[in-house]
Image (cartoon, rainbow, N blue to C red):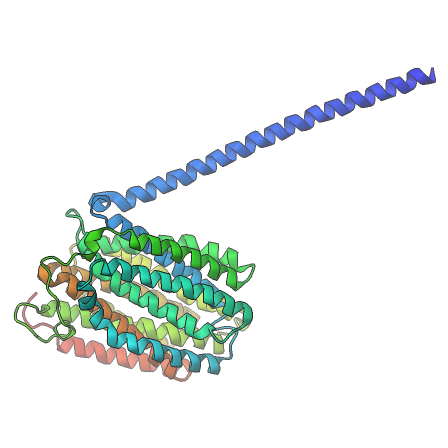
Length: 460
C-alpha cells in the first residue's frame, strides 16, 4: 500500500515536472518568437529610417552629383562635434578653477587660432595646385579630431595637462573643416538645386546628426567622460573615410579663378576678380553675427559657471545647456525659415538679423536674467543661421561663376576669424553680466552703424 502510494506520488511529481517543462518550453518559445518579432520590427524601423534618410540626401540630383556624400559627411561632423561637446561639458569648464581655465584657454586659443588666421587665406590657393587636395584636407580635419579625441580621453582619465591644448586643437580643426567644406559645396551642386537649398540641406543633416549623436554620447558618458570621447573618436574615423571617398570633382578647379581676401573685403585687386558690393555688405553683416556667437560661447560658458542664476548653483552645466540648447533651436528654426522666405531679399534679411542681434544684446545687458539669456541664445542661433543662408544666396546670385567657389571659401574664412575675435573678447572681459554683455552690445551696435553707413548706394 505504501509502495503504491509512493509510486503514485512519484508519477504525479514526474507528470508535474513534465508539464512544467512543457510550459517553460512554450513560454521560452513564445519569448523567442516575441524577441524575433521585436527584432524584426526594430530592423524594419531602422531600415525604413535609413531608406528615408538616404532618399532625402539623394533627392533633386544630389545623389548623382555627389552632394549626398558631402551631406552624409556633414552629419558625421556634427555628430562628432556634439559628442565632443557633451564630453567637455563636464571637464573643460566644470573641473578646473575659473581663473585658471580662462587663462589657459586664452593662451591656447592664441597659440592655435592666430597661426590659423594667418595661414587660412593661403589654404585655398595652396590646395588648388595639388590633385586630391581638398578631399585630403577635409579628411585631415576629421582625422586630427579623431586623434585629439583619443588624446582627450586619456587626459580626462588621468587629469593630464594635455586637456586644454587638445580641446583647443579640436576647436581649430572644426573651424578648418568649415572652411574646407565651404569650397567643396559649389563643386558638387546639382543643376536642380541652388546654393542656398544645398546649404540648408547640409545644415539640416548636421542638426539630425547632432540630435542622434548627443543622447548616445550622454549614455556613454555615464561610464565616464572618456567613453563619450572614445565614441567621438569612432565617429570622426568614419568621417575621415567618408571625406576621402568624396567625388573627385571636389578637387577640380577647371575654369575657376582665385579671389583675394582684400577683394572679399571690398577692394578690387583685379578688374575681373572682384566681389560685388552686395556680397561685401552681407559678409560684413555676417561678421557681426559670428562675432556675437564667438563671444557668447566663451563669455557665457564661464559666466554661468562662475555666477549661476539663483537656484541653479548646483547645476551650472544644466544652466549652460539651456542657453546652448536655445541657440541650437534658433539655428534649426533659421534653417527652416531659410527655405520658406524665398521672396524676401537677402540684403534685407542680413541687416535685419544684425540689428535684431544688437537690440536683443542691449536688452539682455540691461535686464539680465535667465529668460533674457535664453532669448539671446535663441536669437543668436536664429540670426546666424538666417544670415549665413542669405549670404549664400547673394554669392550664388551676384558673384561670377569663375570666382564663386573661391569667394565662398574666403568669406567662410573671414567669418571664422570673426568668431575668434568674439571668443577672445569673451575670455578677456570680467565675468560681470552687465559689463560683458554691455560691451558686446556696444560693439555690435557700432558695427551695425558702420555696415549701414557703408551699404551699397545703388540698388542691388
